[in-house]
Length: 65
Image (cartoon, rainbow, N blue to C red; front, side, top):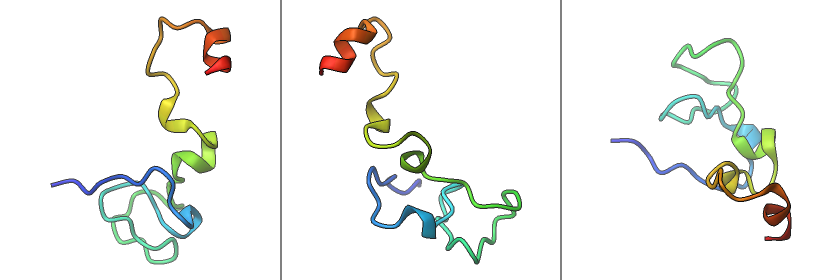
């Protein structure tokens, strides 16, 4: 069973988000590459969880919401 994915973790830089193990950044055991996978909030910023969910809404309406 998959773990619940946190929307706004306190310190996303301390964890590898590449699989369901959520290993510490300096103790990755899954072999999922040589570097940790970043959390989406590190890549896309605040509001990442709402992006792309309504492709029919115009971009200017999305900016007002």
